[in-house]
Each structure stands twice: as structure tokens, then as C-alpha cells.
Length: 535
Image 1 (tube, rainbow, N blue to C red):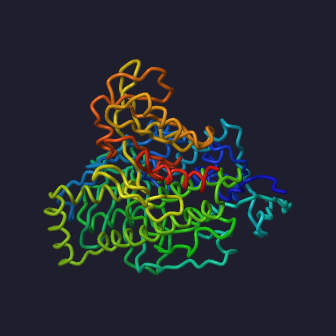
Image 2 (image 1 turned 90 degrees about the vertical axis):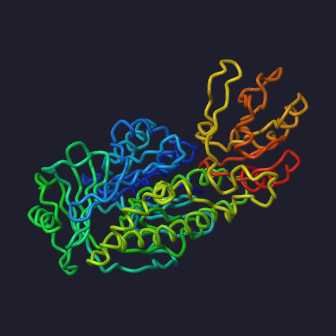
């Protein structure tokens, strides 16, 4: 007999995101954290569009927008000489195209406050000290600061406990990868000199790369490469100012530091993100270079991917093995690709020989004038390009009757629909934010009452508490007895964007990914997915 559905180990951004999703999807859980208080250090700063869209579904995006600063672009220099500006939201199709910058501790504060509003308490000074997957559940030993032990029985365990994860160390997995031959020093401090507060500022010069990131109003983070990789000592503010001077940035001076630190770069990923009833998320599953600011985002998206699946598993819905294994099948390739991409960014950014700098200068000056280059960079950083075409929870076998539309495993984008009563605009994408699957039912051209009846029967196959219907009706007026959730597509633009000129359907998962699509005649694909997941 299980006490709870899920035990979440770790109350950083990843664990807090998973706790939020468990609460939103009706999963019983506890969240434990071995540290007495959350860290005051700013740590991860950047939040990209893919994660911001998750925050919108979680109901906390307005708080993030209120407290964060926008990151509109990157200013790139060589020895203080301006080379180019790269826009960070060029070509990004999202309700939130501009990335945010804010200290990680503020991210944790917002997520914690949201959980507290729902009656959730983080159990601090509680450490995972033992676990055993017995096939029907996980027997877990927790130890408190006073040494008192507790045995908890959970259906599943989620290891969000960082790079030194107890959960990972007690699973038959390897942590594959390398340690880069580079080390960084960082400081969060005030800066004397003019720096933009809505841009990153990167400069390479004779002694390496210098990177300024806005942290909060009046405070910037400076990253620099330490030449002696054997020196692990905490840097001083004088070391940073000497570095700036040697790299041609004599107009800047750091003062009043809030955080000084040193770190090496590990690039590793767990060979399995899921073993039996135990899942590994965030740094417990993958660690890498900070280049691109992808780490916290990827971990939070791990959690957003898993939360709704845990709800199905806890309720005994669908094919338990396919649902559980889909987490590894979807997120493990993301971790591997992420490590390769951040490695390339790291090597490009830190290379600083005279000839190499000349090549980098030419690349930045001229290649970034071609629109597709910055668009490709911003697209990859946004994490909206991530796709799961080979997932067990994606049905993608049908030959689509159009060159338009969105492929199963991708993220379908927004179109403007029309409210049938007010005639005001309605965002289709915002319908995906509900903690359910969403069946989008397209009427096709010249729909009739019979069309409406057929579409209704198609969506009636799934339980109403797990699936919502959105009907896109291609006409200027709604049909008689139009059901709730019917919106107009008077000019057919939504049908065209989604690649349908006949009645058809899309099924969008709670994590905003497309599970399956088909014409009205291809109901078998929908039935197959629903049987695998919701029944």
C-alpha cells in the first residue's frame, strides 16, 4: 500500500516545477529537501520561451514577467570594439518570444509561494538515505537533521537532487561524459561604466572571453576564464578588474560584490533517465557547460514533461510501461543533444588565439547579417524546436493530405480564432494551457449539422476529466445549438495553418506537444492513442 503517489527529492527549480505540476494534475506527493534554507546565490539566470510557455500553463508567468528583466539580444565585442548585435527573439513564434533574466533564487521563491497558496509545504532538512523499487512501488528511507528516520511508500520517486544525486547513484546507470579543460570565475556585482540592462555583453580579447549578464537592477554577473585551471580558489574583485583591463575593457570596474565563485565544466548525462519507478530530472540526469543558459530550463521542462504522465500512472490509466518509458524516450535525447550544442558554444566562445579571434570576428560581423543565422541561434536557445517524433506517446503514421500543418511530436503554434458571440479574437494556443489533453476538431469547408455531430462523436471517446474539446468552425456564424468550446474560423486561415481543408482533428498533450493528428476518416489513430494513455 503506497502512502503517496510520488516522492520528489530536491526543492530547486526542477523539483518545485514537478511539485507544481503534480498539484495541478491531482497527484498526491511530498517534496523533501536536505538543505535547511534555499540558496541566496543567483545561480541560473536565463529563462527561455519554451520554459516561459510552461510557466503560463502553471499559472505563474505573470509573477515572472513582473520580477524579471527582458533579454533582447547579445552585444559582441573584440577587445572592447563593437562587432555585432544578435537579437535573441528574432523569428521566435511564441506568446513570450523575449527571454527573461532573473536570479534563480527568485524563481524558487515564486514557485514556492505558489505551492504554499495550494497548501503544499516543502519538508526541509530531510534527506533521501535509502530506496528500493519492489516493482509495485518504491520503499524509501528518509533521514531528518536530528537523525530520525522514516520509511515512506510511494508509487514513484522523482530524483531532482542535483549533480551528486543520491537517486542516480543508487540506480544501475552510468553518468557518461567528460570534464572540460577550462575553468570559470564569476562575480555578481555593481559595475562602473555603461552596460545595457536588456542585453548580454560578450567580449573576447587577449586573455580569453568576458561575459556580462544582467542579474537584477544595478547588478551584473561577469564570467571570465581563469588561465590556471588548477587554481580552484575563490576569486577576488581585484582579479576581475585586472581581467577586464587585460581584455581591453578599461571602461568597466566591478565593485560591491554579492557573490564570488569558481567552477569547472562537467559535461555528463545519465545513461537512463528512468529505471523502473524512479525518474531522474535536471542536474541528476544531465550537467553541462553554462553556455547558452540551458541547464535550468531543460530541467524544468523535464519536470513539465513528467508531471501529467505521473497523473496517468497514479490513476492507473493506459499502458503504464509506455507512459513511464516515454519520459526517457523523449528527454534523454534532449539531454544528449543539449550537451553537444553547449560544448560547441563553449569551444567557440572560449577560443582566443589571435588567428582564431580574427576568424570569430569575421563570422560575427558577416554571418550574423544573414537573417537565418541569428534566427537559427535564437530558435535553438528558445527550446521551442524540441520534438519527440519517436516517442511511445506520439502517433505519427498517417500520410498527411497537405504540406501545411504541424507534425506529431512537435509544438503546434497559435492561430487567432473568433468568439461566436462577441466576434472578438481567441487564442487557440491558450486553450492548450489546461491540465488536460486538447482535441482540436476542424470542421473543414462548408460544414453542416452532420459535420458537428461526427466531430462530437469523435471526441466523446475519452473521459471528460482528461480531455477537452475545441471546435474550429470554418464559417462566419456558429451552427444552431453550438456546444461550448466552438470558435469561428471565418476566412479559413486556421484550417490552412493546420493543413486541413476537410474535417479532421489534432490531439495536443498537456505539455503542449502534438500527440496525433488525422482526418475525420482516420479515427483509428485517435482511438489507439486514447487507449494507450487515457483509458
